[in-house]
Length: 79
Image (cartoon, rainbow, N blue to C red; front, side, top):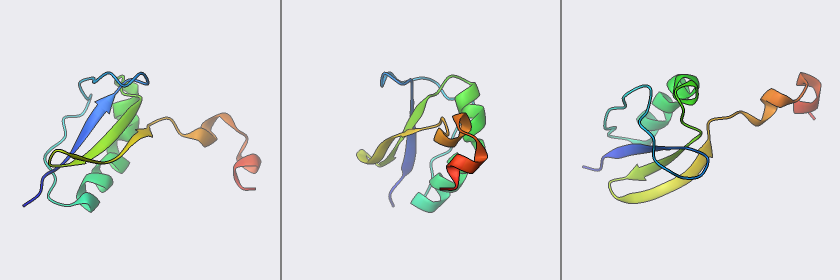
């Protein structure tokens, strides 16, 4: 069975220890649900981006933990 894991990085790609310790996930959906619940704590703890792996294969990344809409007025985000 595959293990889904996250790698936590600074914006320059260097690995950092996560503020919230992840488990090994058995599905991509479980891993993505978890990141959706804790991304803010991870960002506040020093991680800027994450990469998702299935075993040793990178599935995607880097994915920023900084929401792009945060810097814009709400009206602009809905265009």
